[in-house]
Length: 287
Image 1 (cartoon, one colour):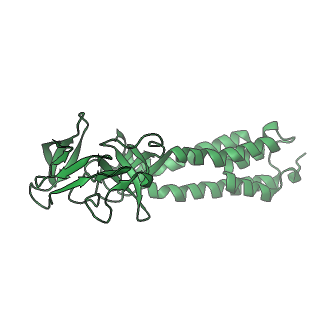
Image 2 (cartoon, rainbow, N blue to C red):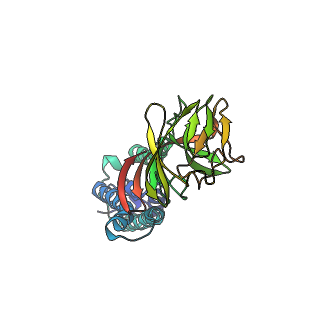
């Protein structure tokens, strides 16, 4: 005999809304339904990326993730509420649906996402300042704990706070370095001129810049001698000299208002892309 009072509807709704419908279903003793909720909600989050990838639609799929998440939680919670009202759940309740277990599920649902984001977090590129490495609309994963022991190395792409916004640039100078910018656009670090080999055209001239040790990456730069102010920068202790890979369309350490990036401004390191907006497709590419 069903007994709707075993699981009061409104607590079920609250648990489902706060802890996701997966937890609400477990609270009702419906393990198979909980698994279905979990799979459907996660597949639904991938749907806009799949549509953009295979359908060729020109939109940012990341912007659809929040509305889809809200819709999945709302619809699943209403379903759990109706099941509780109808008493449509196993009785007696399974052991995993009882108090201590449900509390552990609830805590896990709250803590695991927060713990993951403490270490790794998705980011989007709003501008063209890191062309050609990162294009506007690209999405990538950042490591928020990359520099908990050591500071960034030359060539790292870092995330840092400035003027209440998160910025992304490439480290060119570390503490103690002397960075010189020549009229040709070439860089000199501690008296050593970086490799500056012409690669190909991409609206502007494209070069491969090579750091001491062989680390290299592509940059965009204007014609030699155009819009390039020669300057010398001495990087102070616990600060970093950063540049955008699009040297003529980047606000970076050359700008007096931004200047050097302090170590305590740094949020983390860009690890890899997972979505390329220009091609509208999934793409894993280490940064």
